[in-house]
Length: 565
Image (cartoon, rainbow, N blue to C red):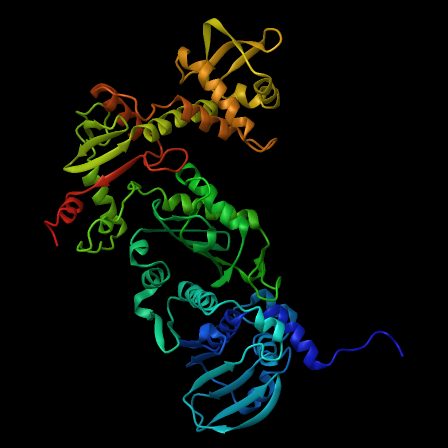
């Protein structure tokens, strides 16, 4: 007897289930996609015990005939495509015809469905992929599928399920994904008899964002769009104060299909640039629409990964879209003062034009040219606090400015601009400084000489560990040259070699050159710093992404002191 054998249908389905059905959330995803593919305007999801006990998905789609029900649980049975060429113009979520058969093979299923206009519906019962009965039944138009005892016949998989809270969170996450990419549909999500999520079409994308991230984050969303060459992108990203330590809350959609892509995430982070703190990620949703023949969705069984025909074009347009969102004038950090008092009024959602009017009232623009620099926001420093913060006023609003972060931004952009334009980034010393480096400093210098020179330092060996420092960055004073060089060498020694970037050195020059916290500033110095800051490209964050200023409007102060309740 030969060694190779053909597996039976039950084993094949269970193997397929291992790829398609990872946990209860996988079932929720596949059934919701079937509902949306059926033309449903309303999708309702019910789970018990985080989906471990039961999952019910009910819709008002076109329903199934008895003949369709008899075929629905057969492997590779689908209504979405008829041949391979259909994948080039795919508009549905499903197309493989594996989901229902895979789910049925590892659970107990009851399907009730009725086509619109039919007098009676059909009920099917399956256990472990085996059809027990198919009969006529009374039910509303549309389809309802109940899945119970998931993995009852695969004990190891059942034991590997996580806690109720964890599985519930995954199920909820799936529903939120589809609320964001299909805001024109009605969704509800219920857990153990309790309604957790509700979205109606009238709420649109704003309602979806509020449901996904909460109303306070949704109020900070910046909207932008871009299109070109068969590609259209809509971005909904939150302001700079709303960031996360992981990219999980930056949701990506391609042709309304939730996807994962580290390259797309990286392109969004790159577009934020130095406005974003290191190891932080934006919050929001990115919707990408591309012609069907320019994207391949047949990459992974769960269809969460896609390949683009021209990924470079997608990334370029995405970065342009994000940069457009970040171009709005008001990127100053806003903080929720309700953390100090529970009786404050909730913030109201502002349109883009209202936001612009608000920032123009907070940072008044000098139109008559009487100010020191025409077009620069008129900000008057009032006092220095703790030798670290500048208390300032602008049009009746209070500003708290971090003097070190503000100075970092100014120095960073000066050095960066010098490198971009090819102007001198270093100043030659009339009398070179002779300094003695440690053995470890010499090693770091040799490994990163090009970067150090690019930042504006010019050193010449003067025997053993002694070096002659002939030039220092133009932003440094002579007395700062040696100290800044040693600090930068120390920073470089702690960076993963050999992948340091020139930008990192510029950051360190800015950091070590900037006005320090604890440094006393005179009134003229505060005025000059504020003027320099407001003439930079990104005055609201330092190069590390930390805020340079926080704005408190009269309304904020009234709420804080409970003058407005």
